[in-house]
Image 1: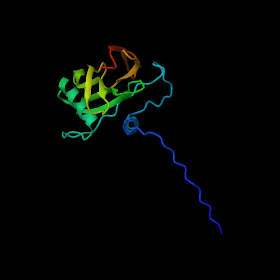
Image 2: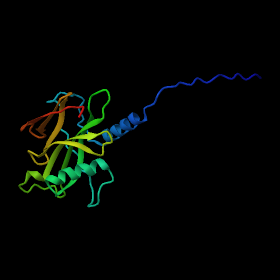
Image 3: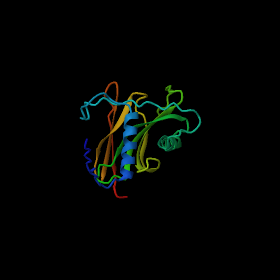
Image 4: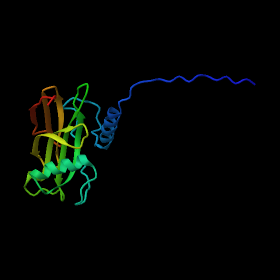
Length: 184
């Protein structure tokens, strides 16, 4: 009996562990976000996504992204309790070092009491670690209680466009445009 030994073939390629880690975090966040159930990406055909609020106690969430989101939203309304990430995406450039996020927060009781600032949406620029907000683009009160959503419509090297629309009736559209220098 004769044994034949084959030489193993080793491939050498540079591995960027930071990129692998960032991709892992992005995929993890992607799977935790609610889905719309639609594969069409046109602005009018995508039904808005209602975020699923985090069920947190008065203690701080162990997720640093939710902690910074809660902090920023509570600066506008200290009664914000439940928070969630509605959309998270890297800047569409070859070496993304920043992320865009739409965050959402609501009071603990979730009941409308005449104040739309009990439900807030925020548009943010995050650093690559997803644990620090670099820039608050805008924080707005909901135009319609528990029936509204926002999404990033367009991101270019110098402009970020966010569009919002009512979920049930599809009315009350809002559009926010922010000037941005991606190298800042």
